[in-house]
Image 1 (tube, rainbow, N blue to C red):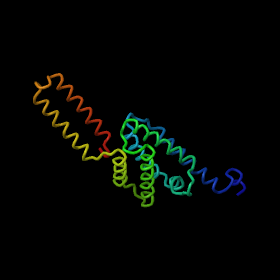
Image 2: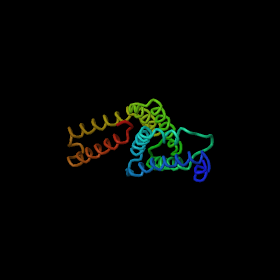
Image 3: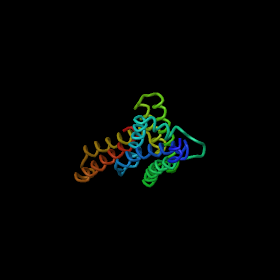
Image 4: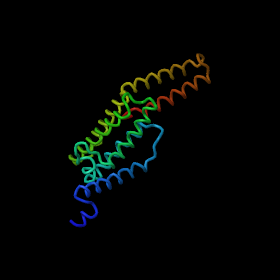
Amino acid sequence: MPTLYHYFGNKQGLTEAVIERGFDLYLGQKAASEPTADPIHDIRQGWDAHVEFGMSNPGFYALMYGSVRPGYLPVAQARASDMLLQLTRRAAEQGRLTVTPEQAAAHILAANIGVTLRLIVLGNPNPELSSAVRDGVIAAITGTSSAEQDTRRDDAVRLVSHAAAHPEILGTEETRLLQAWLLRLTQADAQRTPGA
């Protein structure tokens, strides 16, 4: 007990030191992954990494996110939240969100923590549940759905087929250029689509 009080002040101080250590490990893993030009892709990857960390470190995770006090946000937890907010702000700058960056981050964080705690309680990684909730949250904050994305891809395929069948309308070089542009757009759309 004297050693505990000397280094940590009290039991709460010890708990907070353990939580800080858990966040150091978690944020160290996140910092190791390079951000891409697509913040929605990075959010998706971050979700999966969050769940994986929780399943691999259930004791740390339960202290990090399962021990709550009304009105209290550990400094270490705020660091992780700020990283997510940076991603949602980038998504907003690209015109990808239908809600504010703060609201998007809150939705993602609440759902991600809830899923991870549920999977820890069940002792089952259940990637299907995690993916379904992740994709639903991303669809909600971006205002997209897989059906809408499928329709756009089908329309692009029809347009490319029509242009290829009638190159005299645009000209040979222009038709090739249209095909290349539509291919690039549908590939970018697929990367942005939740669950694609």
